[in-house]
Amino acid sequence: MEKASRKKRVTAQDIADLAGVSRSAVSRAFTEGGYIEPGKRARVLKAADDLGYRPNAMAAGLQGARSNLVAIFAGEMANEYDKEVTTALVTGLNRIGKWPIVIAGSGQTARDAVTKVLSYPLEAMILRSGSLNADIAGSCSKLGIPVISSGRIQDLPGVDNVCCRNRDGMALGTQLLFDKGRRRFGYIGGPPGFASSRDRRLGVMDTLAAADLTPVAEVVGGFTVQSGHDAVAATPALAGADALICANDAMAIGAMTALKERCIRVPDDISVIGFDDISMARWPAFDPTTLRNPIDGLVDAVLDLLTTRESDPDRPERTVHLDATLILRSTH
Image (cartoon, rainbow, N blue to C red; front, side):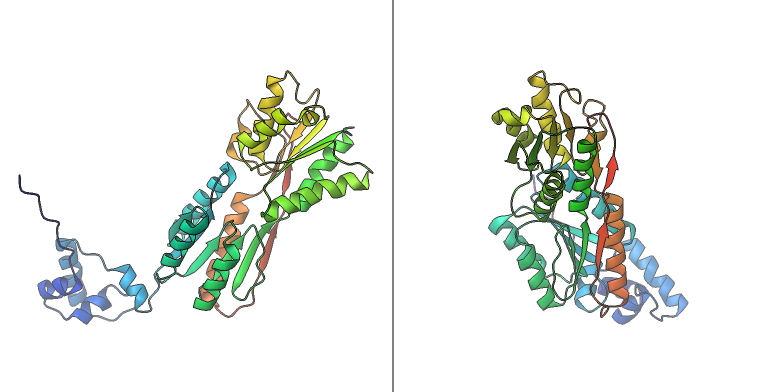
């Protein structure tokens, strides 16, 4: 059986020929504010509808018009919070008429993908996380592509920042457990290289030091459910604490699962708190007390920085700080 040939893409010249107008008239008909006689516009739009034509937004972007393309470098997205943030960013960008290109992963594969996407007429690059952030921000700055860094403050020209007050939030959670009478603190931190890992640990350690306390055990996790479970399973001193602070909710959920397997009651025997307030944290089976890292606030800030940079390309760089909110549930 002969394979059907692929239908040729309809061009602006095809529309011009059918409507009996010039190629430039077709372009003006699809350009906001472009002048064209009403009768000609009507013929152009009818011809486009008949032939199934849509203007090539990529070509328009290369010619200086807005492409509405915004790249998101999402990193490895190893935990639920990163996935929820990326989904919310995509939805928010769509809402204001932008079309996101999402790049995930790490290492050379991600580096190659970023290099390729920078050849497109991007209106902005949103950096979520990862070791490539500084390199990407530098490349975008040279190309004149605005950058919004979310999660790690980048002090570079043309780079705006959105960052949660991780240190203050974790200090608030640690103080909650101290006020409850807990004194034997364990801590499961995030992986090195993440600004949030550093800042959340500082919030815990500062608060404990002020009370003349040190952790009975400290383990580095991977911001995943499995790493939280493994930390408790491999470190008896964590299970022997009366307060366990986890640098994110995923690790708190894994840790609570391991504690349950050892018949250690939460919160009777040990208090557990997390950070982020992911959707899974609202499941009754887990229900951890946590610090909400506000996704809605993050997306609103990113979109505001994007649109204000669009309207005023030369405005000074801005950094938006978001407060973490203590969410009291059943595990503290």
